[in-house]
Length: 263
Picture 1 (cartoon, rainbow, N blue to C red):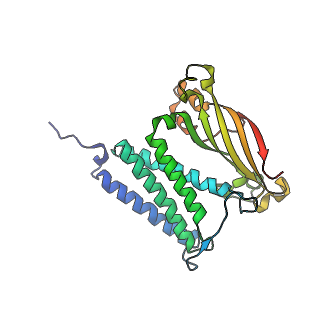
Picture 2: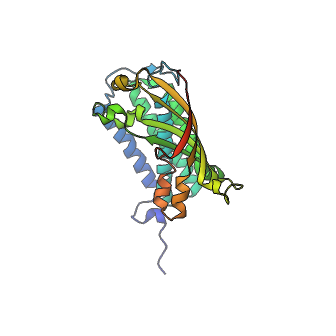
Picture 3: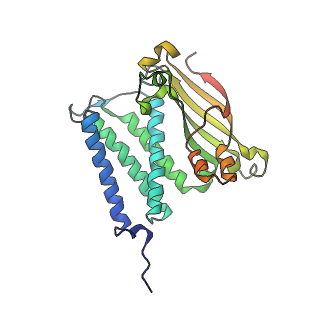
């Protein structure tokens, strides 16, 4: 009888070697890309104070939520890959969180040697995203009830072609957490399983190309009732689409009640 080959070693490399090679390649890629495009190494190490969600901060806090949810998404991606390589779920979640945190920590360290500077605020939000991602992977009830998503529609500047940095197009993003009806046992057999409650935040007008469109910069906190699209697609066996909708919020599929923090 042929010896069974562990899932993580079918190409001749153990899962441990794959993990080390992947993380080394990612860190090396960040350093190389940073030197070429982010001006790493051009200054002495410096720490900057970027503030948090204040009106007079650079992006009103949208960049901070961007750091958190990007790290969270990285945890999900790394953990999924480690699952496929044969790691146990607890290991995948832990190593995924550590890999994601290391990735974004390396970016922050590189920024320290550029005009951007090392931001403690960014590192705190990266750490928060890694912790939330780990907990989301490890606690089934948390994962079933709560999604963390972004909504994105290109901003005025991006649509006009004056800003092609879509990652930092903060006037096109909304960040939200959703409490899903199908994950709550008391609602899972009622029509409310197709609904969800959302709490979100976004900013507009903080970018230079926004001035003629949004006017003065402003920050918005909102609550909404939305359609639980991931549940609907899952019920119809569109599982890949359903999985994507755990992370992306489709515009115009919710009714918001908004509060402008700068009125």
